[in-house]
Length: 487
Image: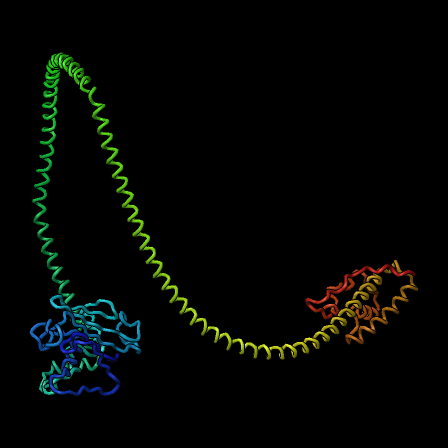
């Protein structure tokens, strides 16, 4: 992995976003004292995981944030991003899915810092291991500062060994080894603690047994208590029944008292009926007042509805005006776009006309070639029809020859002569005799009669397999059985 560029925002003296491009070869920064040359190196160390504010030349980690000046206010955040070239895919497997790796560290005042790798939050340990695998880091010997050469010369063998391990590219392995040792120590501590807990639980078993015995005794006592409580409730129920009888007698007394009170209520109702005669006049007055109030409320509601309708109408007109303005702008843009499209269409039309002229010339040539091919095709079809007719005629003749009882000797001689003529024609056209003629000659040579039951079928005739047939053209004419030859 190689460093491509360094991006700083709000880090020490870099208040504005600044990108420092690291080109191939040697890249130098030249400037007067106090211009921020050391801040670049410190930003590089900080983004690679430096956690010591003393190495940052600050009294606290928040001091790396721009603290303001006479013309600029102070910032609350600082961010440094380092872009690594990963085209050779040498990064750890978790971050080896892209050609460029972005490592970012952002700090907020009094809130600490956050690391991100390719936009995802990561731990400081992950960032340190990433750079340790690349044989670098915040405190790597490859970061040479002032007085660093003298320290390396006067360093102890242990420090020199660290330098050699980093040059060999195994510093990341040592970091992982240290982490594994810490985990093993933690596991051993947990095992010791587990032994202590086990011994403590064994000491608690006796007390738990004693508590179990106490719990059994508690259950027995609880059963006795429930039995005695049931007896007590029965006694209370008997007493309640007695109290109920006494309450019934009191109820009868109260009922007679209620009858007396009802008589008094009837007399009060008579007085109320007399007073109700005066209510109609009062109700008419109340109705007139209520009608006037309702009319006023209706008028108020109508006025409010008219005002709301007027406001909605005004808002709608304003929306229509804004929509019409947008439509006018859109139509103007469409007119400008259509003008460019028309110009392109004119150019395409000219190009198509030229292509069409060339296509006409090619079409004329293709038509001439098509005429030649059509003539050849017609000639081939004519020859195919002639061969098909000859084959049908030969087949009919062979069928007649296979029926000797229906043909007289004179007719058979005439057919034999006709057959010899056709066989000669077939031999001149194909270069060989028909299969039936060949069989007959073989029978004569062997001085044996020609077997009638083993005549060659059309499927076994080699001459039929070699007849030219054109797929997709006119099919051969249907076979017609010829009438038997007359003697």
